[in-house]
Image (cartoon, rainbow, N blue to C red; front, side, top):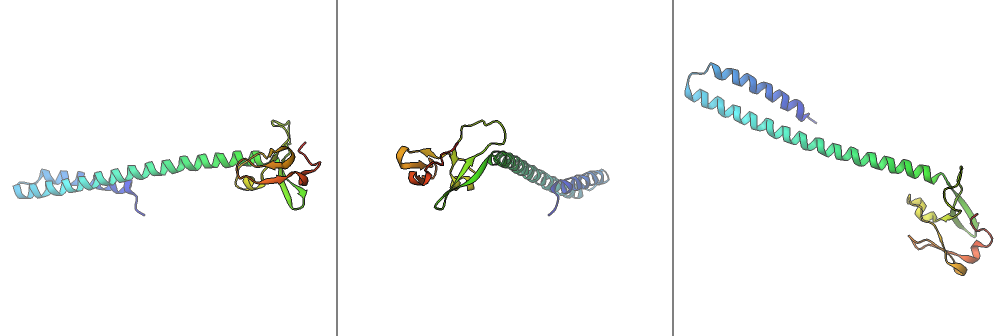
Length: 151
């Protein structure tokens, strides 16, 4: 892949050399031909400069998106460390909130399906019928929970 900025600099140097050549021309036809070549080279240099600027903006946008994505992943990693997979029996699992320091949230369970998709969705108590995830609608029947309510 060529470097548009380096090409633009190289063409600018060529333009300077051609301008110096114009000093010595005495024949009108040669002067016009040299001026046309100079104009063509200048146009090419301007196009390369515009392309380079566009490429730079695209790269800056990508860097910003990747920086935001990296920050989101770091935040997720820090938050997900406060959860632990808990087996409720009968093949039912929940992500149980287990903070390592002073808890900032009350005890609760998070949906394992949403958790695997980097999202914390707190299971909502549906009274006698059990628990339900408000995001993916996963249901945890009440008879499976028994005395294992989050503490």
